[in-house]
Image (cartoon, rainbow, N blue to C red):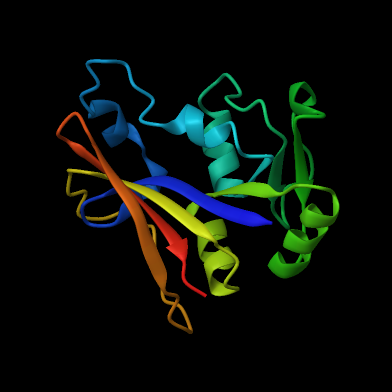
Length: 176
């Protein structure tokens, strides 16, 4: 199974502003209405794993944006809205066990989303590829993409694309 991170970050390494704000992402110039490669990425994904905070942020968008199964990793959530039944499911437990269980269910390519969940997967060395788009803005504070790890994790650079002479998307593969 391959676990992917696909995320945007500020120049100073934040994935969200204070209190999880994402408004800074709406100010990115996009004259061609590009999705910056997201549709190519997501078509190869079998399911999405996210944490409670990311799930709650996605719910605030109004329309559910995913047509893939979504697993919300949370020990505190008890239920999901009825309109998401069959599209999203709450799962609990140890990250390694969750990863193994999803693999046994036939999922081969997982999109791991959300700061805490990404960190938990990295801490267990369960991230295989990272696609990180750097937005040229300094937020100054917020939710960082990376946190302290107990070990070094080496990645190899696969490629970098520049969009609108503004965004830098780099793809890294775990070097094991």
